[in-house]
Length: 447
Image (cartoon, rainbow, N blue to C red):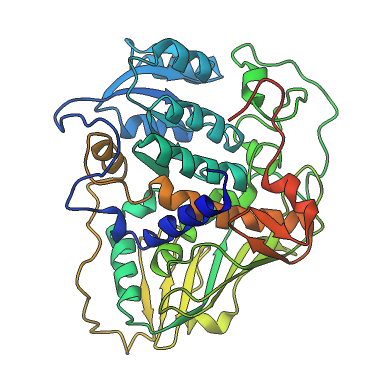
């Protein structure tokens, strides 16, 4: 899908489903390849089985886990005790090449920089795909993920678990029913980062310790530029390094901004601007504020979305205190400011909501259900793989969603406001952004 007209149609189609309800058609999934009987078990290959990956393996363990893959044998061997009949691999490419005929679907829970290469390879082989958030490391990769899923008609889901929550879905219905009026401003915040990055770390370590015997460092690097192993990157601390992670924004915005993105059908922003501490080429900032401007959408007005992350001078970067109307300010959450009232969700997942002012909404009548409730996050995807309704956070939604989120990191790195051309994936009058929208892969790696 390279022609401009095709991209416009893709974006149009993605926008139509942004409210969630459009993905559900009479309890069936349309055009997602061969269906399995709901009672049959899927053959799954799990890519990345330590850390968050272990949680995903646990979420799908009721199916047949036929292959497990991790670049670190320590995580691999630990999972092998739970699935002794599963074949073990360190290289997902080898796993897919050798077991392609046996595997129906994959879960992907690698560090951010390897999400797209693993997922796209699997989808091109016709495998259904569950991928952890953020869906990708780069904006371009998010577009490719959504287009690939559509082309190969596979069932997909991004791992932002809050999407399955009943309160999040009900909150979307309340906003879309107009109970808080027109929403022109949204504020979001997180207490991340909780791992080392700028300002504490601004340069690569100079020492070169030995690679742990259990770790294949070259495979861990994947498409990222080559550099010596160091414990500053693996495990977990990779999130704060630009080459591997996507910082606080990538880590948490696919959770925290999920509710307003769905409820307000935000789509692609027109402009993006960031304020932060001085950005260095190695690590994400210790604090930042990103402002996105969205155009009017149908009967919804133009909207400003402001993201806050980290700590400045030791204090959390937060929205204006008066917006909370006397409520205790949580460490992370979202505020949707409507002309008739405010939705305050004081957590990352939209799992709880407060409607302000309280006295006005004390006896709020809930609107009609327009979004089916989830049978459970991982089960929702498993059911989709077997021919059921698509998961609500399938790549038609989470691809454009991830593009929006990651544009904040692009704005941080270029250090100036830019207009966004979503059709062509270009920051207008900002050619320096190209390298952050689409990175160069290391030789031997591709989509």
